[in-house]
Amino acid sequence: GSKSYGGKSKHKSLGGKLVKGAVIGAGVYAGYKVTKMATKFAAKAALAPFRYRFNDWNSWREVDGMMCRTSRDCDWIDPKLYCQDYELKFQPSSLWFGGDFAAIVGECACSDGTFWDDDQLQCQIPPAGLGLAALIAIIVIALLVIGCCCVGFCCYCMRR
Image (cartoon, rainbow, N blue to C red; front, side, top):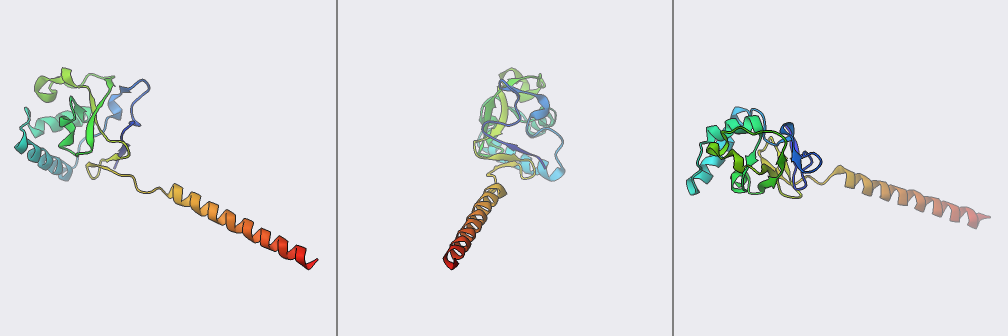
């Protein structure tokens, strides 16, 4: 699955421009993912109806990714998603949001410190990296080696 890190998005180009191939959520989802999204959509629509149907939104998403006008267009998918403002470098479908495509300001993006997990269909907090653990291990090993060398040198000097 794909993972897109949020906040200062890693898939936009220089100058805050969004290219079509870099948008999260683009492409065909397997049946279980569509069902999961449709359930989230229905839950939010029950509280505040949308002016479009899920199947319409899903067909737009497959082509253009998760476009948005405001964070309301995103937070039904995951509360950590918000509408990231970008200058689009492509023309999204004129069918978006029931014809309100001119109001699109960017794409849904995960908040700082989280990333979009396309398998789980939600923003996730990155796992503690092996990089930090490896760095700590290297430091500990280096200190042990230095410590052993110092002890060995002291023992050598005392025997003289």
